[in-house]
Length: 209
Image (tube, rainbow, N blue to C red; front, side, top):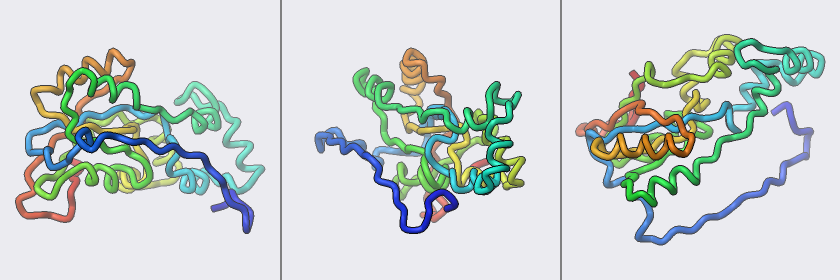
């Protein structure tokens, strides 16, 4: 909204991957006690920009120029440069974990819908996810958008990645080794939560505390 003129559309490229059926990750293996590892994002990535444009009033070209070309101490660059930070891709570090026999039980890519829509997809019906918000390394860009847009924190978690581009679910006994391998791949990964029982089959599969 506010970007395309009427009857205009965007033709985007895409890639299709294939995996042996025997190697497909099965979230039925996720169980209470497993840990949730965060792979940091590089910024807003490619989701939530409709709200970003609304918060920053980017539909007004005069306002947009003033906002986007202003140097921001929080980022060490202009806001426009910060918003254009390329999306971090996690293929190689995740494959390195697999090649080192780390049993990744499930993965969630934190895209549109933030934490609340994406993490539950990596769970089975018997478990829920508990996320410790104080553990999350929220990037300055999200603090800026939350302040400028006067947006509630939980709403932010339902829209943006908040500094977490991907989550991995791994058993406790493999977590330390997984973190070491990710660090070798220049990924400053860290634990943000744990898997808990969902004995009551609650619809709310994620709890941010």
